[in-house]
Amino acid sequence: MRVTVVGAGVVGTMHAWQAVERGHEVVQIERETEARGASLRNFGQIWVSGRAGGAELDTALRARELWEAIGARVPDLGFRANGSLTPLRTAHERKVAEAALARVDAGARGYALLTADEARALNPALRGAFDAALYCERDAAVEPRTAQLALRAELLKSPRYTFLPGREVREVIGENAVRDDHGDVHASDAVVLCTGAWLGGLVRELAGPDLPVRRVRLQMMQTDPLGEPLTTSIADADSFRYYPAYRSAALDLLDAEQPQDPTAAAHRMQLLMVQRRDGGLTIGDTHEYEHPFAFDTLEDPYEHLTGVVESFLGRPLPKIRRRWAGVYAQCTDTSRVVHRQRVRDGVWLVTGPGGRGMTCAPAIAERTADELGW
Image 1 (cartoon, rainbow, N blue to C red):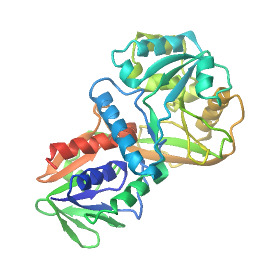
Image 2 (image 1 turned 90 degrees about the vertical axis):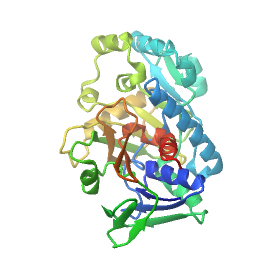
Image 3 (image 1 turned 180 degrees about the vertical axis):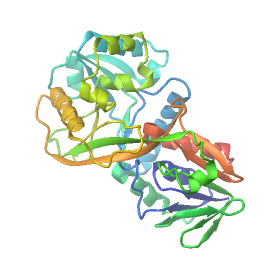
Protein backbone atom coordinates (compact mmCIF):
# COMPACT_ATOMS: atom_id res chain seq x y z
CA MET A 1 0.00 0.00 0.00
CA ARG A 2 1.05 3.57 -0.70
CA VAL A 3 -0.06 6.33 1.71
CA THR A 4 0.13 10.10 1.25
CA VAL A 5 0.14 12.15 4.45
CA VAL A 6 -0.42 15.89 4.13
CA GLY A 7 1.01 17.83 7.07
CA ALA A 8 4.17 17.34 9.13
CA GLY A 9 2.93 18.31 12.58
CA VAL A 10 2.71 15.71 15.30
CA VAL A 11 -0.62 14.26 14.07
CA GLY A 12 0.60 13.95 10.49
CA THR A 13 3.98 12.57 11.52
CA MET A 14 2.37 9.94 13.72
CA HIS A 15 0.18 8.86 10.78
CA ALA A 16 3.31 8.52 8.67
CA TRP A 17 4.92 6.54 11.52
CA GLN A 18 1.99 4.14 11.71
CA ALA A 19 1.99 3.56 7.96
CA VAL A 20 5.75 2.93 7.76
CA GLU A 21 5.63 0.65 10.81
CA ARG A 22 2.94 -1.40 9.08
CA GLY A 23 5.10 -1.88 6.01
CA HIS A 24 3.60 0.69 3.65
CA GLU A 25 5.20 3.27 1.37
CA VAL A 26 4.66 6.82 2.63
CA VAL A 27 5.00 10.24 1.04
CA GLN A 28 4.62 13.04 3.59
CA ILE A 29 4.02 16.54 2.20
CA GLU A 30 4.46 19.74 4.23
CA ARG A 31 3.70 23.22 2.93
CA GLU A 32 6.46 24.82 5.06
CA THR A 33 10.11 23.83 4.98
CA GLU A 34 9.42 22.57 8.52
CA ALA A 35 6.17 22.39 10.47
CA ARG A 36 5.60 25.68 12.32
CA GLY A 37 2.20 25.20 13.95
CA ALA A 38 0.87 24.05 17.30
CA SER A 39 3.01 20.91 17.29
CA LEU A 40 6.05 23.05 18.10
CA ARG A 41 4.31 25.75 20.13
CA ASN A 42 3.10 23.61 23.01
CA PHE A 43 4.31 22.26 26.33
CA GLY A 44 5.36 18.85 25.07
CA GLN A 45 3.25 17.36 27.83
CA ILE A 46 1.67 13.94 27.57
CA TRP A 47 -1.19 15.08 29.78
CA VAL A 48 -3.30 12.21 31.08
CA SER A 49 -4.41 13.77 34.37
CA GLY A 50 -7.25 16.03 33.24
CA ARG A 51 -8.74 14.00 30.39
CA ALA A 52 -12.43 13.18 30.37
CA GLY A 53 -13.29 9.65 31.44
CA GLY A 54 -14.11 7.12 28.74
CA ALA A 55 -12.87 7.41 25.17
CA GLU A 56 -10.70 10.47 25.79
CA LEU A 57 -8.88 8.93 28.74
CA ASP A 58 -8.53 5.60 26.92
CA THR A 59 -6.97 7.44 23.97
CA ALA A 60 -4.59 9.37 26.22
CA LEU A 61 -3.49 6.25 28.11
CA ARG A 62 -2.90 4.33 24.90
CA ALA A 63 -0.97 7.29 23.49
CA ARG A 64 1.10 7.42 26.68
CA GLU A 65 2.12 3.78 26.10
CA LEU A 66 2.99 4.50 22.49
CA TRP A 67 5.01 7.62 23.36
CA GLU A 68 7.04 5.64 25.87
CA ALA A 69 7.74 2.86 23.39
CA ILE A 70 8.70 5.28 20.62
CA GLY A 71 10.78 7.31 23.08
CA ALA A 72 12.80 4.22 23.98
CA ARG A 73 13.54 3.77 20.29
CA VAL A 74 14.09 7.49 19.51
CA PRO A 75 15.93 9.01 22.49
CA ASP A 76 16.00 12.47 20.89
CA LEU A 77 12.26 12.73 21.54
CA GLY A 78 13.28 13.53 25.10
CA PHE A 79 10.51 11.34 26.52
CA ARG A 80 10.46 11.30 30.30
CA ALA A 81 7.88 9.87 32.68
CA ASN A 82 8.01 12.88 34.99
CA GLY A 83 4.42 12.94 36.31
CA SER A 84 2.74 16.16 37.42
CA LEU A 85 1.91 18.03 40.61
CA THR A 86 -0.92 20.49 41.19
CA PRO A 87 -0.19 22.39 44.44
CA LEU A 88 -3.29 23.10 46.56
CA ARG A 89 -3.71 26.07 48.88
CA THR A 90 -7.32 26.18 49.97
CA ALA A 91 -9.94 23.82 51.32
CA HIS A 92 -12.00 24.27 48.15
CA GLU A 93 -9.07 23.24 45.95
CA ARG A 94 -8.41 20.21 48.13
CA LYS A 95 -12.06 19.11 47.83
CA VAL A 96 -11.80 19.19 44.03
CA ALA A 97 -8.70 17.01 44.27
CA GLU A 98 -10.47 14.63 46.64
CA ALA A 99 -13.40 14.37 44.20
CA ALA A 100 -10.92 13.47 41.45
CA LEU A 101 -9.41 10.80 43.69
CA ALA A 102 -12.90 9.31 44.14
CA ARG A 103 -13.27 8.74 40.38
CA VAL A 104 -13.45 5.11 39.29
CA ASP A 105 -10.57 5.77 36.88
CA ALA A 106 -8.32 7.54 39.43
CA GLY A 107 -6.02 4.53 39.62
CA ALA A 108 -5.54 4.44 35.85
CA ARG A 109 -4.41 8.05 35.98
CA GLY A 110 -2.03 7.46 38.87
CA TYR A 111 -3.69 10.04 41.12
CA ALA A 112 -2.45 10.51 44.68
CA LEU A 113 -3.01 13.29 47.21
CA LEU A 114 0.32 14.28 48.73
CA THR A 115 1.16 16.41 51.72
CA ALA A 116 3.28 19.50 51.06
CA ASP A 117 6.35 17.71 52.43
CA GLU A 118 5.73 14.68 50.20
CA ALA A 119 5.32 16.95 47.17
CA ARG A 120 8.57 18.76 47.98
CA ALA A 121 10.37 15.45 48.40
CA LEU A 122 9.20 14.56 44.88
CA ASN A 123 9.97 18.01 43.47
CA PRO A 124 12.40 19.96 45.71
CA ALA A 125 12.14 23.08 43.52
CA LEU A 126 8.70 23.77 45.05
CA ARG A 127 9.78 25.95 47.96
CA GLY A 128 6.69 28.19 48.00
CA ALA A 129 3.69 27.97 50.31
CA PHE A 130 1.02 25.34 49.67
CA ASP A 131 -0.78 22.79 51.84
CA ALA A 132 -1.00 19.68 49.64
CA ALA A 133 -0.71 18.60 46.01
CA LEU A 134 -2.50 16.35 43.55
CA TYR A 135 -0.02 14.01 41.88
CA CYS A 136 -0.61 12.27 38.55
CA GLU A 137 1.95 9.56 37.92
CA ARG A 138 0.91 8.90 34.30
CA ASP A 139 1.72 12.38 32.98
CA ALA A 140 4.90 12.63 30.90
CA ALA A 141 6.75 15.00 28.58
CA VAL A 142 8.67 15.20 25.30
CA GLU A 143 10.55 18.06 23.61
CA PRO A 144 8.04 19.77 21.28
CA ARG A 145 10.48 21.86 19.26
CA THR A 146 12.53 18.83 18.23
CA ALA A 147 10.14 15.86 18.47
CA GLN A 148 9.01 15.98 14.83
CA LEU A 149 12.64 16.29 13.69
CA ALA A 150 13.61 13.25 15.76
CA LEU A 151 10.67 11.22 14.48
CA ARG A 152 11.43 12.17 10.90
CA ALA A 153 15.09 11.27 11.27
CA GLU A 154 13.99 7.81 12.33
CA LEU A 155 11.45 7.58 9.50
CA LEU A 156 14.09 8.55 6.95
CA LYS A 157 16.00 5.41 7.84
CA SER A 158 13.28 3.52 5.96
CA PRO A 159 13.48 3.36 2.15
CA ARG A 160 9.68 3.36 2.17
CA TYR A 161 9.45 6.95 3.51
CA THR A 162 9.77 10.19 1.53
CA PHE A 163 9.45 13.71 2.94
CA LEU A 164 8.54 16.57 0.60
CA PRO A 165 8.73 19.97 2.32
CA GLY A 166 7.83 23.34 0.85
CA ARG A 167 4.87 22.00 -1.12
CA GLU A 168 1.25 22.93 -0.64
CA VAL A 169 -1.39 20.44 -1.75
CA ARG A 170 -3.85 22.29 -3.96
CA GLU A 171 -6.18 19.66 -5.41
CA VAL A 172 -7.54 16.16 -4.98
CA ILE A 173 -7.60 14.40 -8.32
CA GLY A 174 -10.05 11.54 -8.74
CA GLU A 175 -9.54 8.97 -6.02
CA ASN A 176 -6.45 8.77 -3.84
CA ALA A 177 -4.33 11.35 -5.66
CA VAL A 178 -3.33 14.93 -4.87
CA ARG A 179 -1.60 17.66 -6.86
CA ASP A 180 0.82 20.03 -5.16
CA ASP A 181 1.77 23.58 -6.07
CA HIS A 182 4.84 22.30 -7.94
CA GLY A 183 2.46 20.61 -10.35
CA ASP A 184 3.39 17.13 -9.18
CA VAL A 185 0.66 14.51 -8.74
CA HIS A 186 1.01 12.01 -5.89
CA ALA A 187 -1.08 8.88 -6.41
CA SER A 188 -1.64 6.49 -3.54
CA ASP A 189 -4.07 4.05 -1.99
CA ALA A 190 -4.97 6.44 0.83
CA VAL A 191 -4.59 10.15 1.51
CA VAL A 192 -4.72 11.52 5.05
CA LEU A 193 -4.97 15.29 5.49
CA CYS A 194 -3.50 16.33 8.86
CA THR A 195 -3.48 20.07 8.29
CA GLY A 196 -3.79 21.27 11.89
CA ALA A 197 -5.24 24.76 12.20
CA TRP A 198 -5.12 25.30 8.43
CA LEU A 199 -8.87 24.95 7.83
CA GLY A 200 -9.34 27.08 4.72
CA GLY A 201 -8.59 26.54 1.06
CA LEU A 202 -8.59 22.88 0.07
CA VAL A 203 -9.84 21.75 3.49
CA ARG A 204 -12.92 23.96 3.27
CA GLU A 205 -13.49 22.87 -0.32
CA LEU A 206 -13.36 19.18 0.63
CA ALA A 207 -15.10 19.23 4.02
CA GLY A 208 -17.66 21.95 3.31
CA PRO A 209 -18.43 25.17 5.19
CA ASP A 210 -19.83 23.45 8.29
CA LEU A 211 -16.69 21.69 9.45
CA PRO A 212 -17.27 21.20 13.22
CA VAL A 213 -13.82 22.50 14.14
CA ARG A 214 -12.74 25.89 15.46
CA ARG A 215 -9.39 27.61 15.88
CA VAL A 216 -8.06 28.55 19.34
CA ARG A 217 -5.19 30.95 20.04
CA LEU A 218 -2.89 30.74 23.07
CA GLN A 219 0.09 32.60 24.57
CA MET A 220 3.12 30.96 26.19
CA MET A 221 6.68 31.76 27.26
CA GLN A 222 9.99 30.11 28.04
CA THR A 223 12.70 31.08 30.53
CA ASP A 224 16.44 30.75 30.73
CA PRO A 225 17.61 27.64 32.64
CA LEU A 226 16.20 27.41 36.16
CA GLY A 227 19.51 26.24 37.56
CA GLU A 228 18.01 23.17 39.23
CA PRO A 229 15.77 20.29 38.20
CA LEU A 230 12.00 20.73 38.08
CA THR A 231 11.35 17.03 38.42
CA THR A 232 7.63 17.05 37.58
CA SER A 233 5.34 19.11 35.42
CA ILE A 234 3.35 21.67 37.39
CA ALA A 235 -0.26 22.87 37.10
CA ASP A 236 -2.24 25.26 39.26
CA ALA A 237 -5.77 24.88 40.58
CA ASP A 238 -7.12 26.92 37.66
CA SER A 239 -6.44 23.80 35.58
CA PHE A 240 -9.30 22.20 37.52
CA ARG A 241 -11.62 24.69 35.84
CA TYR A 242 -10.30 23.81 32.40
CA TYR A 243 -9.99 20.03 32.30
CA PRO A 244 -13.08 17.80 32.25
CA ALA A 245 -11.74 15.17 34.71
CA TYR A 246 -12.28 17.64 37.54
CA ARG A 247 -15.93 18.44 36.94
CA SER A 248 -17.81 17.82 40.17
CA ALA A 249 -19.96 19.47 42.81
CA ALA A 250 -16.69 20.43 44.49
CA LEU A 251 -15.62 22.29 41.36
CA ASP A 252 -18.96 24.11 41.26
CA LEU A 253 -18.33 25.22 44.83
CA LEU A 254 -14.79 26.31 43.95
CA ASP A 255 -16.16 28.45 41.11
CA ALA A 256 -18.77 29.98 43.42
CA GLU A 257 -16.65 30.54 46.52
CA GLN A 258 -13.18 31.08 45.03
CA PRO A 259 -13.53 33.01 41.77
CA GLN A 260 -10.65 33.06 39.37
CA ASP A 261 -8.23 35.97 39.40
CA PRO A 262 -9.69 38.64 37.03
CA THR A 263 -6.74 38.46 34.63
CA ALA A 264 -6.89 34.66 34.55
CA ALA A 265 -10.65 34.75 34.00
CA ALA A 266 -10.44 37.36 31.24
CA HIS A 267 -7.91 35.31 29.30
CA ARG A 268 -9.29 31.87 30.22
CA MET A 269 -6.02 30.93 31.86
CA GLN A 270 -4.45 28.07 33.70
CA LEU A 271 -0.86 27.46 34.67
CA LEU A 272 0.97 24.58 33.06
CA MET A 273 4.74 24.39 33.36
CA VAL A 274 7.35 21.87 32.24
CA GLN A 275 11.13 22.00 32.22
CA ARG A 276 12.98 21.63 28.95
CA ARG A 277 16.12 19.57 28.53
CA ASP A 278 18.24 22.75 28.61
CA GLY A 279 16.79 23.62 32.04
CA GLY A 280 14.45 26.37 30.85
CA LEU A 281 10.78 26.41 31.79
CA THR A 282 7.91 26.42 29.30
CA ILE A 283 5.02 28.29 30.95
CA GLY A 284 1.46 29.00 29.81
CA ASP A 285 -1.26 29.45 28.84
CA THR A 286 -4.23 31.51 27.66
CA HIS A 287 -7.18 30.66 25.41
CA GLU A 288 -8.75 32.98 22.84
CA TYR A 289 -11.77 31.77 20.89
CA GLU A 290 -13.25 34.84 19.21
CA HIS A 291 -12.23 35.63 15.64
CA PRO A 292 -10.44 37.57 14.33
CA PHE A 293 -7.58 36.80 16.71
CA ALA A 294 -5.35 39.56 17.99
CA PHE A 295 -2.02 39.80 16.22
CA ASP A 296 -0.10 40.87 19.31
CA THR A 297 0.74 39.22 22.63
CA LEU A 298 -0.46 40.82 25.86
CA GLU A 299 1.65 41.38 28.96
CA ASP A 300 -1.01 40.98 31.69
CA PRO A 301 -1.25 37.18 31.24
CA TYR A 302 2.53 36.81 31.40
CA GLU A 303 2.67 38.89 34.58
CA HIS A 304 -0.05 36.74 36.14
CA LEU A 305 1.73 33.50 35.23
CA THR A 306 5.02 34.83 36.54
CA GLY A 307 3.41 35.61 39.88
CA VAL A 308 1.84 32.17 40.19
CA VAL A 309 5.06 30.36 39.27
CA GLU A 310 7.18 32.41 41.63
CA SER A 311 4.73 31.74 44.46
CA PHE A 312 5.17 27.98 43.91
CA LEU A 313 8.93 28.09 43.48
CA GLY A 314 9.51 30.56 46.29
CA ARG A 315 12.05 32.40 44.12
CA PRO A 316 12.18 34.77 41.13
CA LEU A 317 11.86 33.31 37.67
CA PRO A 318 14.93 33.28 35.45
CA LYS A 319 14.94 35.76 32.58
CA ILE A 320 12.19 35.23 30.02
CA ARG A 321 13.94 34.05 26.88
CA ARG A 322 11.01 34.06 24.46
CA ARG A 323 7.26 34.64 24.24
CA TRP A 324 4.97 33.40 21.51
CA ALA A 325 1.42 32.80 20.38
CA GLY A 326 0.07 29.70 18.68
CA VAL A 327 -3.16 28.49 17.12
CA TYR A 328 -4.59 24.99 17.21
CA ALA A 329 -7.73 23.34 15.81
CA GLN A 330 -10.35 22.06 18.26
CA CYS A 331 -13.59 20.15 17.70
CA THR A 332 -16.54 22.39 18.52
CA ASP A 333 -17.93 19.40 20.41
CA THR A 334 -15.09 19.33 22.90
CA SER A 335 -16.07 15.85 24.09
CA ARG A 336 -14.75 14.49 20.78
CA VAL A 337 -11.06 13.59 20.76
CA VAL A 338 -10.63 14.33 17.05
CA HIS A 339 -12.61 15.00 13.88
CA ARG A 340 -12.01 12.17 11.43
CA GLN A 341 -13.94 12.51 8.15
CA ARG A 342 -13.82 10.84 4.76
CA VAL A 343 -13.97 13.83 2.42
CA ARG A 344 -13.52 11.89 -0.84
CA ASP A 345 -13.14 8.22 -1.68
CA GLY A 346 -9.76 7.28 -0.26
CA VAL A 347 -9.19 10.75 1.26
CA TRP A 348 -9.53 11.39 4.99
CA LEU A 349 -9.32 14.58 7.03
CA VAL A 350 -8.01 14.19 10.60
CA THR A 351 -8.03 17.40 12.62
CA GLY A 352 -9.38 19.14 15.72
CA PRO A 353 -7.72 17.41 18.69
CA GLY A 354 -7.34 20.81 20.35
CA GLY A 355 -4.98 20.88 23.31
CA ARG A 356 -4.92 17.07 23.20
CA GLY A 357 -2.88 16.90 19.99
CA MET A 358 0.55 16.30 21.50
CA THR A 359 -0.86 13.95 24.12
CA CYS A 360 -3.05 11.83 21.90
CA ALA A 361 -1.44 11.92 18.43
CA PRO A 362 0.07 8.40 18.48
CA ALA A 363 -3.25 6.81 19.45
CA ILE A 364 -5.21 9.00 17.02
CA ALA A 365 -2.97 7.81 14.19
CA GLU A 366 -3.21 4.20 15.34
CA ARG A 367 -7.01 4.43 15.27
CA THR A 368 -6.95 5.89 11.75
CA ALA A 369 -4.66 3.10 10.57
CA ASP A 370 -6.94 0.47 12.10
CA GLU A 371 -10.10 2.00 10.62
CA LEU A 372 -8.53 2.27 7.16
CA GLY A 373 -7.26 -1.31 7.31
CA TRP A 374 -3.57 -0.49 7.07
